[in-house]
Image (cartoon, rainbow over all chains, first blue to last red; front, top):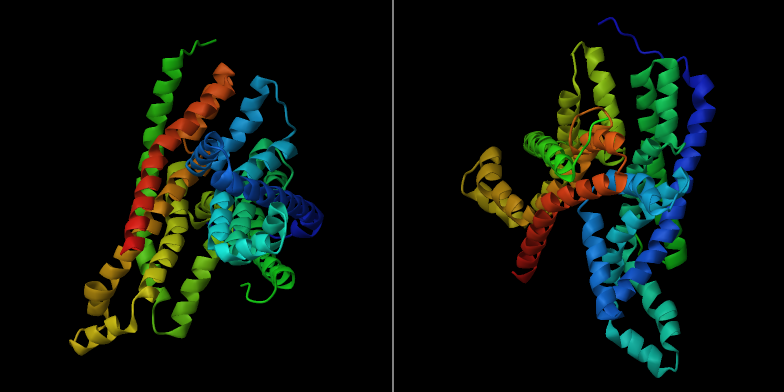
Length: 222
Length: 215
């Protein structure tokens, strides 16, 4: 007992925490873009691709969804070099996060594509648009609008999950917290402050995504 | 240098997997009990009680589980409790699970028509009786699929307790990997063991969902 909290170290650590947070945001930004793109390809492949491709995507989704992200990360970072593929920590983290997120968003995007009435693409084809134009200009925007809330939640979840990549020495928020507490011996206070930063990041990210979604996809996005 | 045959690796991993299963069960049961209390708060009539429960849920859903585990591990000793990785892991995952389960079940309670409450009241049941006899059984029944789905998430989350030093599947695999230098094989096997634990539950949840959709 007699333990008293001490936040005196905080003033000198603000810069480090901000740098870590910036790295976390960079990771999630890359993951969001790459993961969404990959999941659009995956969802289309799972619907219209050749049978072996459909099967492969199905297996990929099940494997990723039924194993822990931490194990996937270790497999990519420690396991792949034995096959001659050596990635630096940041790339490995981005790859693991993207692959993990895509497994969840493939299903989400697929549900969105199913939700667009067939008449929409039939009408667009009748107007003489090429199949690719029909998909990119007619079907996809409507699908994205439907799934946007689910996509937003998934992005926030992924941001929180990214704390794990500190384990392969990516210098993001959690890694900086580990370093700070090793230097200050104020473990509880350090993790407390960083937890609050994460809470702020997740609330801010959600608000940003909802606001940005309204602007790009139009009204009705929540 | 100790030689590890393939079967040595598998045997050690399977032995460690017992702890993963045990921790998952402890956290699920503990989380269900605490989650029930949070649920009572969340659906209470008092605005402030409701707000406290919402804040509790938002806090656990808005921060990384890893941070929650660290705060448990480093925070509880300050309260004078001697804490070991097992205690921190079980308690951390319990609170984590309680927030998610309360939110899932709250969705079930909200989905019930108002008439269910009114019917209970007209039968002369008081609030707790209504909950116990009418509301909760139905709310649990319609949220069975997401509850099983969350159990899968919880099993996967136990991997994080390796970071605070709890000797479960992933931590054991790290140790084996450090001795054998065969990360591809070791982490591949770990992924396989997790898959074998989670996949049947995922399929079960999917079947429940389909059945609920067909009704």
